[in-house]
Length: 170
Image (cartoon, rainbow, N blue to C red; front, top):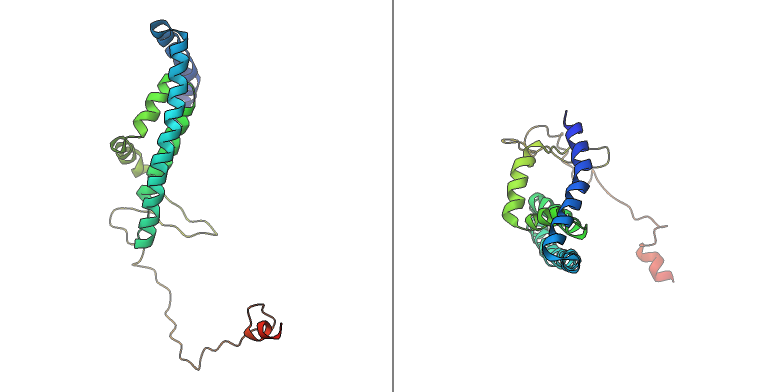
């Protein structure tokens, strides 16, 4: 049911952008309209750079503290989408892009769509589904194997390039 609405939106968006160009062109003139389009692209690049570096610092800080940087990743993705929308010529996409640079708007959008996002595990990575009251640490734990020093010994591999004896022979 949602696919026809998305298809219609994709078809109508260029028409709305053209109508926006015509209306702004009539009100301001051709050169002012082109100047606005170029200005929004430049503003998008600068905002992406400034807020992108801030997001990378937050990711680094959360990683050092051992927290899962889920919100920071979501906000970073929205910043990239906002910058892309500012680079695309058109006033409607510029308005949406500028709105996405506002943190309150990003939080509002994530609160609306975040409940529908589910993270699944794949064969090569392990991830969790976050739900209210769900604790990934509790529940299905595997058996605990307690080894003594005699039970586990590791001999050095003589063919390893990191073997101390090989380094001394050279």
